[in-house]
Image 1 (spheres, chains in turn purple, orange):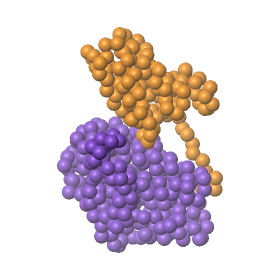
Image 2: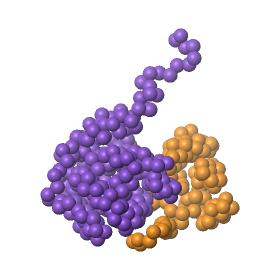
Image 3: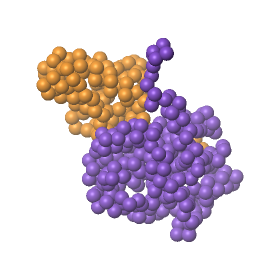
Image 4: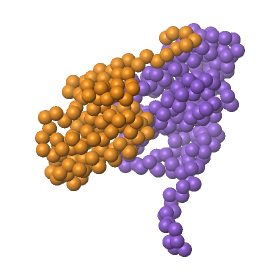
Length: 260
Length: 130
């Protein structure tokens, strides 16, 4: 696999799966405003997934069915952070997940601004422009949720649960060396991880939320990036591909009476 | 970042890159015809031409093939396929054009600042504040 191709799969899969989780809040989010905001953010993330999958189609010869609908769930390489099922009604979980992801996303995109792969570099500014609002949204909710004891405890529980999975955002694959060497991404995952920790740890601590010591965190067994995933992913995958399979594209459509 | 209970989103204006928006001014022959045809294609959500919205980045006609480069207002635009098809069909109406392709570009990123004066006028009539 080409380095750019490998990086595109990481990018696209993260965005697609996160968007799928966000859409589950539709009509259930705590306020009409947050419902609309999350719908909007989900739509952006779907848009970004499409923009990266489009490049895989145009440059590497895949089609949409290969990339999304008929791909083996074990071949998806998104981080486990984005696939985890949201505990029922736990808005803090979604806010924390969005925050942890969006900061990492900004850093990753910055490292793609000068990508040697021009078609990636060309798309970064548009995506960054849309991501800014996502971070603003996550931050504003984090601020609100940490303003009272009860909701801060929920944020704390979400951080405890999600932090180990957020670290899988930076898990390298066999392609990491080539991605950096070819200049597809100008910073390594190890550097991005450091930058991310430097930002999210003090930010969360300033809100009186404790952050696990990164070095002491037990890595989740499935890492996402290598195709190993939690059960939550396989359930989600089955759900979002169900309609595609019901449509039965593998059977030719027949006019009424034909072959009767 | 404010921690006020009631926060809001600040819609900052983007910058207009040199040479944008493109409206086909100065185009001749088949290319001018394609630009004219694209002026008839409206955004699916509001009655404004995609040319006045600044969404068309380039038109070239080589032989009997037209190539249109355009962008979308935002990446998640659900009308992407429909728009691309509308644009392709419009380009095919130009005389001498037998084949047309449409590519989507995201650079330079589109912003409201790229809407033409005519486009702004139409958006205001439609009830948007621009």
